[in-house]
Image (tube, one colour):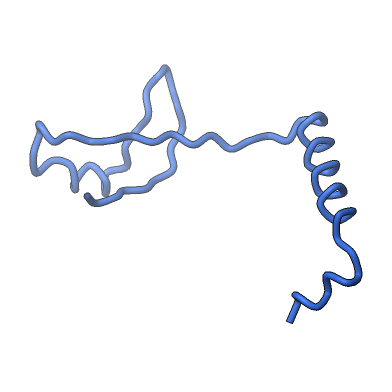
Length: 71
């Protein structure tokens, strides 16, 4: 299976497919495709708090004696 990746915007419930990508799809008008939509996340204050607590908890569990594994 080949993968095609592109950036677009949703406008009126539709995603515009760039012409370069369309050229790759027109060989077979009945071609099955799988569409994956990833939306850029905006970090809300709650998400930032969770991330910061997770990082703190992770490093709180690190002891100086664990340094032997760093090499």
